[in-house]
Amino acid sequence: MRIMGLDYGSKTVGVAISDALGMTAQGIETIHYVQHKQHEIYERLETLIKEYEVTKIVVGLPKHMNNSIGERGEASQRFANSLRKRWDLPVELVDERLTTVSAERMLISADVSRKKRKTVIDKMAATLILQSYLDQQHIGGL
Image (cartoon, rainbow, N blue to C red; front, side, top):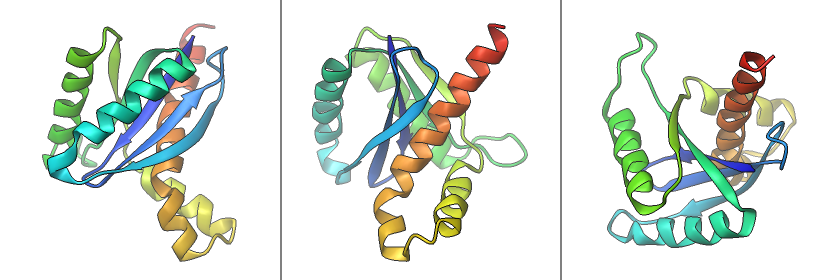
């Protein structure tokens, strides 16, 4: 049973996968796309879902600090709904406030160059989103 974590953005989708036990998240890639070619996202996700035998998907839901949902959050909700319709898998939205900021700070503290950070930030954010979800599941299951 593997869970896929996604950080959905306007030009990229960061992708992370859990280990088979659902304990840890690992970033696997960033999917780059153009708005009018979103089918490319779904084609790549289809391949990854089969390859990793994904049984659930979690999508980061960007919220404002006051807990309201803005334009990016609404886009993430639409994306999650499209995933539900496309595949017979549970899809959950997970609060992702500050995950990209956290990912950026982690990369800076690791002395990763600005150019390299741009290539891995979305994958790292997806990893943080998924790991947060996994941690919540294990705390709740204790």
